[in-house]
Every structure is written in structure tokens, then in C-alpha cells.
Length: 320
Image (cartoon, rainbow, N blue to C red):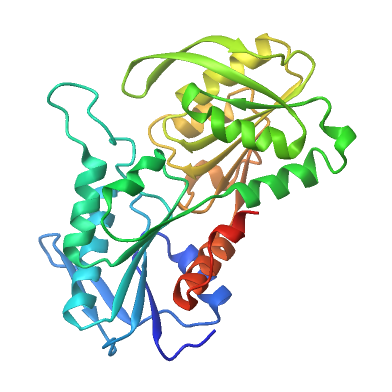
């Protein structure tokens, strides 16, 4: 791709993904120093001219979410004040995405606040992947491109579970809650597999109780689909319920591996045979030595989106 009028800068949240995106684009990452002052304030210095260029800033706002979000905002502001022509925030994992509506009379809508901060900092476009709530796109007054990990997951599922249509007869795609039914149905249709839904009742933040399974899972291989895994309470309870209903094997696919609190321990000790995630959030600790975890790189997807945004080509064709 033409390199004279584009620069890609990366924050500190996911250096491995940044390197892979850079390799896919065949373009070195922009030179910038990102660090901290002694009191913890973010310090950014752009080490090359960006005047009039289209700059992409790659940064997942994953834990520690506040630090990575502030870092992203400061980099965008630095590029704006360095007279960059356009600034696209590439956020594979959009933190605060679950706070997309008022769930109590005096609760904030923090997903909207983050959108306002990004625009105020100087972002002229945003790219993100598998948002927790698709309507967050409407919080922005600048163009928003929504990527999906669906092509990555579908290819992996087809290769490992149903290379032929006949292999899908005992396969069922499971939505862990009502909000994921549309996504699960889309996967089931493309895989020619069955569909099941888990009815859960949430009793508090990060606390859920599985109540019932809608659909036939007896004697079938079950694939649970979700946009993220946080504490893994919902996912592991869902797996236990599927096992009780006669599922012969359970696998989980999720775009974002937040894995906070007891998540990794719960997953390792659960009925799930394998957890497949993308590298939108870097994994560490026990996940690196356990054979239960499989990571698919979203770098080709993110890199191709950057190419197409810069060249003015369609992004939607990536998913058909």
C-alpha cells in the first residue's frame, strides 16, 4: 500500500498485535515515545512529522482500562496538535462498552462519555471490533467502522468441527443470553447447525444464574458464542447447564478475553474443552501454559480495515 501519506502509531496495550498489524501492512510503526512522568501522568512525544498525514492510533482500552484510555487520548491530542490530516482511533477492544445505557435512575452512560472524549481529543474516525452493544456506534458524530471476528471464528469452526455439511448435524450454536441470539443465529445459519439459547437472570454486576436452556442440546457438540469473557461466571455456568442437558462436548468462542478476577481458574476447571479468543486483548499467566486456550490473531482483519479506510474501499465486503 502507498506509505507516503499514512502513519500507524501504537499504544502500549498490545505490542504484539501492533507488530502483526505493521507486518500485514508492510509498514513500520510510527515513531513515538509513550511513557509516564514520576507521578503517573501520561507522557507522549511524536518523533516524526505527521503534518497532513492520515494517522491511525492502535490501542485497546483493556485493563488497566483507565491508563490505556488516557494514553489513547493523549496520543490523539498530540497528533492533532502536530497537524495530522486525519486521525483514526483503532480500538480492537472498546472499554466501557457495557455501560451503554442507564440501568439505574442515577447511573452514567460511560460508553457515550468515552465517545465524547475521543472526539474532543481529535479523532476523526473510529474503528472497533465486536462491540458489546452495536448501538454505541450512534454515540459518535464521526464515521465509525465496526469489525467482526466472525470470519476468523467461522473458518476455525468449519476446519475443526464441520468440514462438510454432514458433520454439522450434531453441532449446535449456543447464545449465552438473549442479547447474543442474533449473532448465534447468523453462525448457525452459515454452519447449517442447530441453535440454542440460555435464559439467564442476572442478580448483580458480574453475577448471573442460568435458569433454562431453550433448544435441543442432548447428544450434540455445543459451541458457545460471546463477545467477551470477563469473570467467566456466565460462561462456566452455561457450560455446566449444557453438560447437564446432555451435550457431549462444549467449546467457547469469544472476541475479547478480558479474563478478570477468577476467570482463568474458572475456565480451566470448567466443562469447556477449549476457549478460542482473539488477541484484541493480550493474554498472560496461566493461559499461556494451559492447552484449553487458543488465540486467533485479528491482525489481518484490523490491518485490512486500515488499508481499506485509507484507500476509500468498502469494509463491509470483508464479512461476506
